[in-house]
Image 1 (cartoon, rainbow, N blue to C red):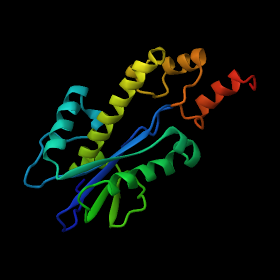
Image 2: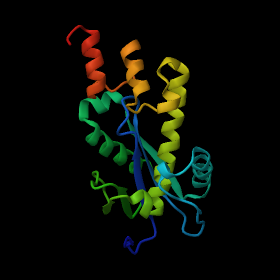
Image 3: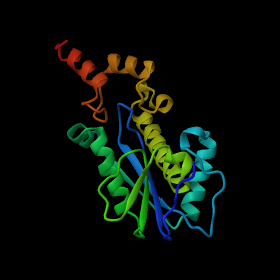
Image 4: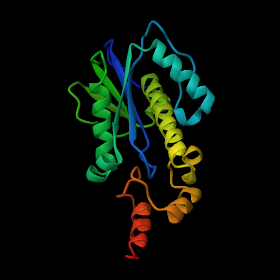
Length: 200
């Protein structure tokens, strides 16, 4: 599938990582690539090995015209809901760019509130280089945060499941309860908290 690109120079790509996990921030990245300094091997971050993602993330940071991150905390996610929090985080990432883009490609089927034209592209992380780059930066950043959280709370196994709803994560929630970084509005976390409070 060929994506029609606008006839402008400064095009940003935006993607998010962390809508599905039960813990931690939803992390977004915005990237404007340098057309004169291409990066080989850009792809959907989920299809790359950890080692390849790390190498590409370093190259993107080195070669891109600019990049920025946006995030929403578990508290904001609980207040807004995950979809709205993702939109806010994307807006923050674009606002954080040192250079204002003329056009923005967003991964998915929704466009956050932005002051410039934008287009949502389903599976954009496989189709648009700028979105691929953003997906890699966001994934590497969030994974690093999960490793840090794992050091503080090793009993939850965050280094392995990265906060996603796995059997191991559910078992740890049952045994140890929720930590402050858990998203209290997510049903699996709610159920554990309800049982802990004797409500279920």
